[in-house]
Length: 145
Image: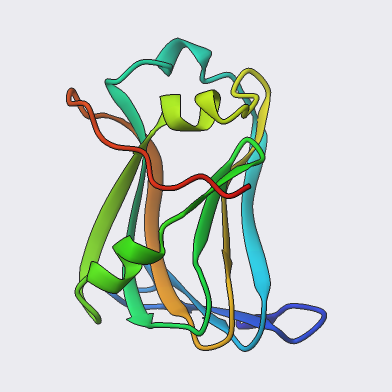
């Protein structure tokens, strides 16, 4: 069922995108983050230009502030990608795992698979996130300091 964060700044609910309840809609009413967690994972073997964090989602509304994605405790600003994403259409972005490692992320004992931080007005529907072999040299977005 629908969930709201304890402070009321982030709401989530299951939605239909390509199939019944295959997406999770997130709506920010203030500065907040969500974290996808699971069992600890070791991604050090994938630390080369051939593997990237891939996020498939639909940007539903732009917010008032930056949008950040983090892995292993290191965040990157993807606001420019958000602005360029087709609104209301499923799209994806990829960030090479080496970007997170170069920023100091511990990918040997990873606990959060993905963290997204945004502010009031941002809304997105998450469909899938995974580590994907990409076979190309992708750029890193700006690191958050």
